[in-house]
Amino acid sequence: MKYTLLYLLFFTTCFLVNAQEKTTLILFTDSVKCPACIRLKTQVLNTDAGKKELKKFTSVITADRSKPATMTHPLVKQIREQIPGRIRLPKAVIVGSDGKINGEISGFMPAGIYLKELQFYRDLPPLFQAVIRGTEEDVRRIMKDPGVCYVSPTGTTALILAIQKKRSDAFLCTLIRLSDKNKISRQDMFLRDALFYAVENDRQTIIPLLRTAVAGQ
Image 1 (cartoon, one colour):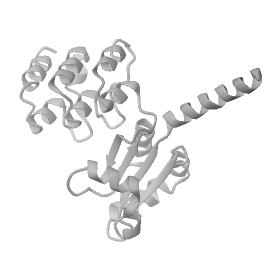
Image 2 (image 1 turned 120 degrees about the horizontal axis):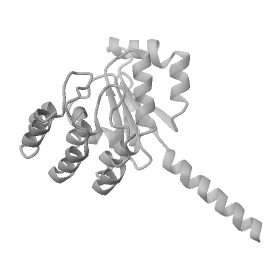
Image 3 (image 1 turned 135 degrees about the vertical axis):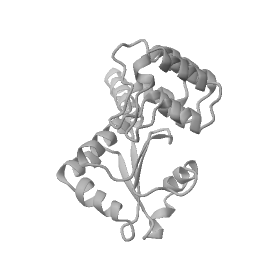
C-alpha cells in the first residue's frame, strides 16, 4: 500500500509538471500567397535547427489561409478572437497551458533570432509570466532578483509587454518603479521604447512617469 501511494504521488506530480509546461505553437500563414511565409518555412522552420525547436512544443498547429479547413481548429478560433484586426503574416503565437498567449512573433527574421524568440516565449521567464498573467505581487517578488530576465531576444522589455497587454496604471507604475532606469528607455527591434508604446496606447497616467524616469538617467 505504501509503495502504491508513493507511485500515485509520483505520477500525479509528473502529470502536474507536464501540464504546467504544456505549450502550443500556432503558425498563422499562407502557403500560396505569402512570400514571407514561404521563406520562413524553407529558411527557418524546415531547417534541422528549426525542426528541433518545433519538437520542443507540446503541439504545433498550422492555420493556413490557403487551406480553410485548418482555420477551424478550436484553439485557432479561440486565439484568433484574442487578436483584433487582420493578422500580419506570417505570425507565430505561443500559447501556454492556461490558454493564454505567452508571446507573438510577426513577420520573417533570420533563423538564429527567430528560433531564440520561439524558445524565449516557450520557456517564458518568470517576470514575463507575471506580466502576461497580470499578477502585480509576483512582479514585486521577481524584480528583487538582480539577475531577472527583463528583455526578450528581439528587445521587447517586460514594461513594453505590460503596455501592449494593457495592464492597469497601478501595475505599470509598480513595474516602472522597480525597473532598471537604463532599461526603461531600451528600444525593441522596431526602434520603439516603452514611452512610444505608452503614447501610442494613450496611457496618460504613466507617460509623465516614463519621461521623468528617462530624463533622470
